[in-house]
Length: 273
Ligand code: DGL
Image (cartoon, rainbow, N blue to C red):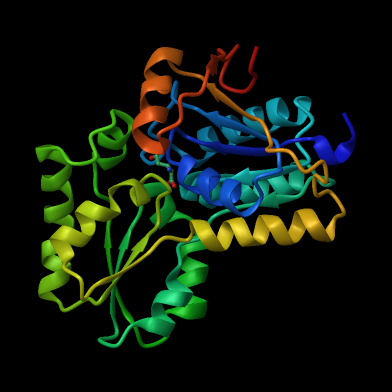
């Protein structure tokens, strides 16, 4: 295996990062990918920063052992809590993280009112505060953590009553304030865009940062001379720290992929077997 055949490593607290994987896959079909969903610990959102850093470090070590040539932190919560820590710990590794797309939202909004859906840890992180300070000039932001929505999506409930209730409770007050843009600050949420659009109506723009993240990964892989030139479709390995069979069925629901899923276990909160 040459370096260029080495995989792109992607991780999330669960299946949310698959919304980023699908954009990377469509942009770079030749690339091998290894995806790690830490379903044994999901949700990360309510967890302390230090614990999310420990999980992220352990997953990064695992992905590097699988020869990952770049690491995509396809998780806003882990990016907010751990991206700086990861870059300081793995000095020679390239990381691409997520940040709530406040900048494009602020550029596009006409009403000057924007909704942001993310997890508590994302909203508490310095990354979100800095994005707001740099880009939200003059725009009014309305935030909501959509408590319970990640778990619904982890169970494949993209249209159920509970999923709809959570989104209506989050969106209705924002719509009353006349928002015209919604930023998806959690990688799980693109999987419920159709429901969000049905609730918010066609006048409200929904911004999913995954395509922009995929373009950034492509730029870095090409700039680093790491692109896989072998011309065949890349292989995707799906790994979960949860239950392989349920991960397999969620993969079918979310990506319509009938892929094998490998289950691994944590030795402790910092190391993967
Ligand atoms: N999908 C992740 C994000 O983008 C994390 C959600 C969670 O585990 O709470 O924040």
